[in-house]
Length: 309
Image (cartoon, rainbow, N blue to C red; front, top):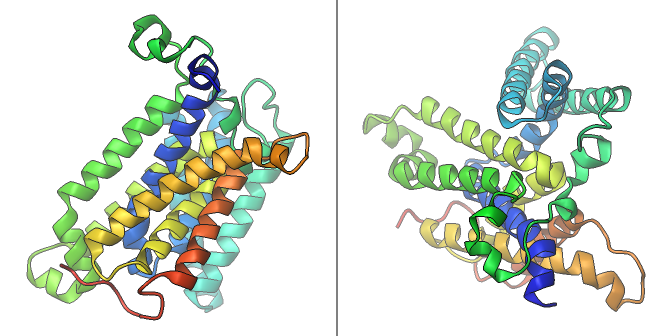
């Protein structure tokens, strides 16, 4: 494939997939170590009805209404979970499962009953995203990367995910030490003056921002997979947190690139005529990487959290 074909057709979807994968994997490391990995799954479930309601009210899928709708859905989910837990006297995990699945199903029903023909928002879009369609029509080749007029035609999902990734990276770098201390020893972190509940809430908020930003482009499948698979695979490669984060980023990039390539060319190599979902293949490759790490990773037989370094 020449630059005249690759840049307009594949460069932007590939970059968006990479940015989304890394933005989810970075906070996913701390969620996995805190045994809160399913929060990523929860976020991807509860944001759907919030996004749909925001679209029905505003008629657009702009970032701000989506964020506000997702935040409202998250608050509602917390209220419902607490109400079910107290009124029904059941364990928090069961209450979470009921609320998350119910809200996701409600979002699907709202999508099916809503007129979303004018935008890329339907049930399949919510699950698989629209990664393949995010092409750069104004590009003519590599020279377009330096052409201001061509850059003005970039899919809006690309700068959105770039800004989101930058925000997640800055959050991780600025709060690295408090995050590390509170993850490994919450009691000691409190004696150091760290407000651990607020820090934990901030981590969840950052994860939610990454999930919502990625939701429109890549759907819920990648969001769920990338919060868990790259960090969990990285945990089996090392006993040091800094190295684990590096491995998780590498695994997220490999999953995004290999998944996107295999989605387009894998079926053709096997004799099929049609490509498959890029989002689905990226999530599948993240699972393959996790399986390989579980089989061959040097730390696969060890338990507990990695060292602080």
